[in-house]
Length: 401
Image (cartoon, rainbow, N blue to C red; front, side, top):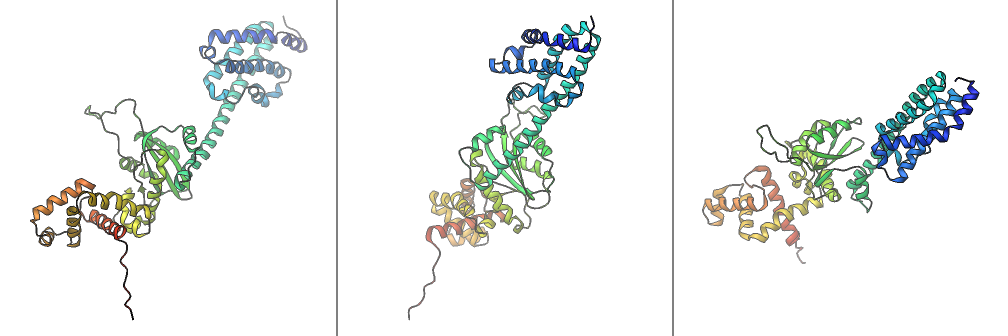
């Protein structure tokens, strides 16, 4: 039975409560996720459905009100509702509401049937707009929060809130962390960097400060072992291998990987070393790209980096001193004699094979091989820094008059 528009509006207002009750019942019967929600969230979803029905009546009275449908339908719901139900579930909710209203209202009038179709389309687009705006706002917030976390790591000024900020970013890194620092254009393809990091088995925090690009890397725990083509289980990539895969995302210039630290909270130590390495990397003519910050220890120490001096002493000089003065003396002689086995053997009154054996023990103990030119420079810098720290700088005696 068709009537005037005023009569149809009056009739729609009388059945609003009935439509709301039918909608809640239909939601319970057809949408399992609705029944599994806590009561407060179910109440919020029901409120959205009821508001949608009321808004349809207002829209039917004045179709020019379409632009504010989104705020009218979704403003009654708490903000956390957008995080608890997905866009797909929201569209399912709209479909249920529309079907309930259509079953009850459409037989009365063809005009009402067409109005329901138009309104449901507008609400669906409005829902998509709401979720798009929420995603955009969350993306901007995440970018600001990520920049804040990276800045805290670089400055070492972390506080008690840093773990919660990291958790809010959805950090998936497990355990060890390393910081990669280089240069980049002001327009960086952040999404491509994240994809490359994921393919390398790593999570990443990205900070762009002017032309300096900082990546905080952490390995992602694999739920299933990665296998090679031969069927063997592949070992996780080292941080240096991950850095090599990310290298194309940086522009020309030094690219330095800080040392590995135990977790993200300690990442500032890796960041300090990487920043100090970037400052001196050009002084090594044939430095690889990327290069480890600890491979630049001599240059960093000469530039006044206290962390580099402590690293040289703690990782090289003190272990040798604690293990055997014989090894320390052999290394001193070998480096002072231009890495000559024969000259070292003559000075120590031992056989050259004894020198070889002792140098092999040095390598086993500290990990650096004195027979290589670059590593010899690192070892000699460590011996000098350790000697100065142990005995103090030599002071010139001023003759008495």
